[in-house]
Image (cartoon, rainbow, N blue to C red; front, top):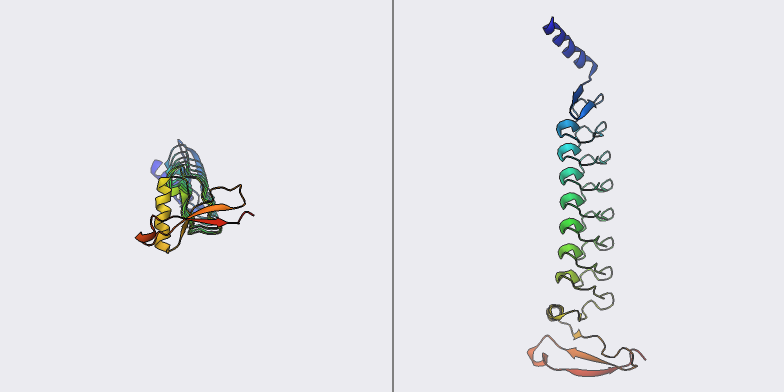
Length: 236
């Protein structure tokens, strides 16, 4: 009698296309997609919304991971890869970088440029303003580095190359030397030498009508130590 009941039960489930399973994670009902991933694989995992996309990644891979919004893009990266990672906004660009690669990383604004640098490469790095220039230097390369204003000049020197360096004012003159520190000066000297340009320091007296500029030609050893004082009426 027990064998007959087992056979009857199997035939009934097959005919109705329903599988109901109960375990430590609660009851799973997969009426529409019996082959859908089971969120009960990992205890405590929430229920997956896999009715539309049964092949979608299972958020239960990582315990405690939230539900992924992958209804539109079932191949989108799974935010549950890293425990505690927030939900990724990959509805528009499913191939966008996954902010969950680094635990605690902030949300990347990659809606416009999915190939933009991922601020989650360095934990705790701020959001990069790469909407206009997706190839702009990533301020997250150096932890704690400030945001670079590279909207106008995406190839301008990245202040994050040196940890703790301040923001560079490179909107008008991306090749102008920065007086942040000695390392910064050496870096800009190399850049000026490579680009074959002049290294011009900031005005000595900003309040006066005539300002002195120090001009050094970094291209040849002859002028490396020469200093010229030029009277300018930029502020007149």
